[in-house]
Image 1 (cartoon, rainbow, N blue to C red):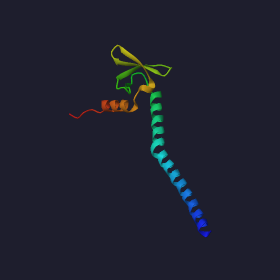
Image 2 (cartoon, rainbow, N blue to C red):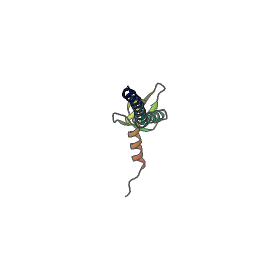
Image 3 (cartoon, helix red, strand yellow):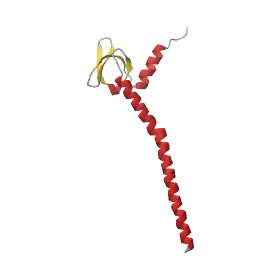
Image 4 (cartoon, rainbow, N blue to C red):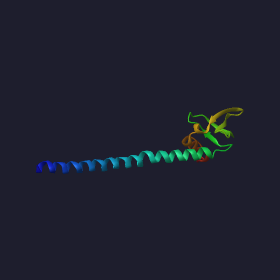
Amino acid sequence: MTQFVLLDAQGGGAGTMQLVLLGGMLVVFWLFMIRPQAKKAKLAKQFQENLQKGDKIVTIAGIHGKINKVNEDGTIEMETSPGSYIKIEKSAISLEWTQNINKAATTTPAK
């Protein structure tokens, strides 16, 4: 009978250890996956809310243009070439590509 009692005591400790490991994996998953995505989504939303007429933008489809008008319904009229306009959603604007194109435009090449 003593052998059975010792086996039960060891089994309870293993269950606790599994819970601790599972909790640790959840924390690591949150730190490396969920938290950065939430931060990136918040930054993209703030970027989209601050768009103004005249800003140069790039859509997620790769279309380059300039904002002609920001509408109240969450859409933007984008001028792709002089006299040519496209109506797009604010969510279709790429934060990364727009920042890269604007950064490239502000840096001047050395001659």
